[in-house]
Length: 118
Image 1 (cartoon, rainbow, N blue to C red):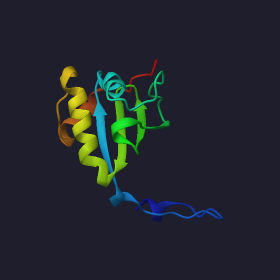
Image 2: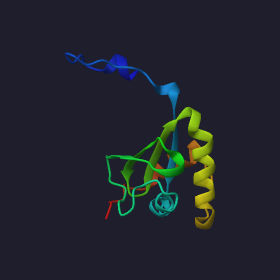
Image 3: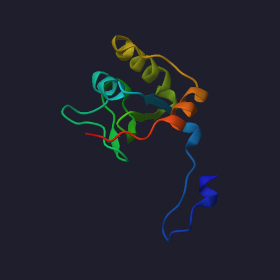
């Protein structure tokens, strides 16, 4: 779908890798702390809106995409998705992390404005 909508750029090509990756949403006020505790960012760094940050440790290789301070997405190769999920759930236990469905996330999006990063 995206490839069909893309404008041609000389010397560039589009490859659909959708089936090769898994996206894990990390949403809520505890998201930045969970990301830090899970070791997804290099020491001393923090999530930045609209930036790609190489994930580290247990979920390597991976990218952390930041929409805002409370809406993060971890992108990992599909083969690593199960391990990344287990790692996030273990790191989130002390924070009371829970799983929610798409409908709950859509309702949250409808009522909450974006949260600025510090």
